Length: 361
Image (cartoon, rainbow, N blue to C red; front, side, top):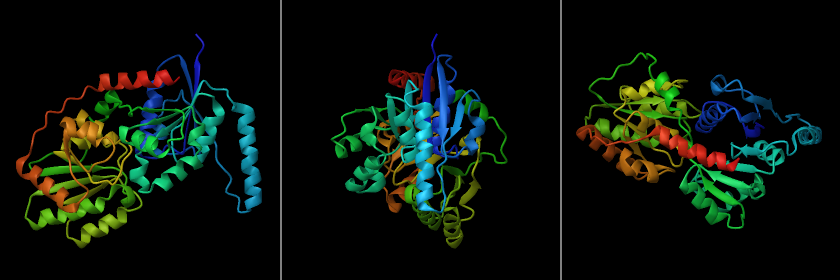
């Protein structure tokens, strides 16, 4: 049987939601003997690199950083021409999986006529300005893709509203979840044990522009002032980790908010949590929602992509993006320890997504 040639393009395989979703998808697809998969990275590095199946071929496409603008431009044009000579329309399917990457956009558009652009956010929530959303998609030439794929209904709705000239098909396809691997990794021993203290988990990159963990810290300050017994484990790191640690120290919250750093395997920590808490301004499609449901841990989140279709149904509570409201709901959960009837069939969920993706091929 003739194998279909698939190409995906992204920036790196550093720790992040987009990268985790990409590795999960590629590892799932490569199991099928009918696909030959190539991954083009701007930089061949990242913590997720070791988790990628070795059958996936990796190509590094790194632009020049030469200090001479003219020479840099010539080098980059030369690289583009070389790529086109070698790979122009050589694939049956191509995808720019890192939406913001101009390199990924170019590679995917050149690699096949069946090109797809993945969108991982509600970009109106991200930019808060319709004109900036339009400029963003113009810069990555979204109109030249055969299809645009969003991981949430919210992202699709904003795109169709703000980019009405786009004639291509716009789809929604959520991220996959590797249930078997996650449950196996969750068996790893960690130096913490669950106890009677109501415990929240926050898992993700420490980036104030997006995650707004300052809201969580301020909410915890209010709860501490009321004498409530609770803790928050913060799993992750990022450009604003130092800022958050200073805030916690300044407010004398060291016993309440505990920084566990970036964990290559965060899954055992779900067993410590009574609830997962997100205070973000925006998200793409939070894989943490799926992981929480897999471990039957309720979710307290601000309204982000996926909160309407997943959390509000049976997995937790959606709360306004205000410190007072977040603190009030955290207090209610601490005092009442609510039980949620969380039903999640990961196998059925994945099967539906794979069907959508294979139709794109």
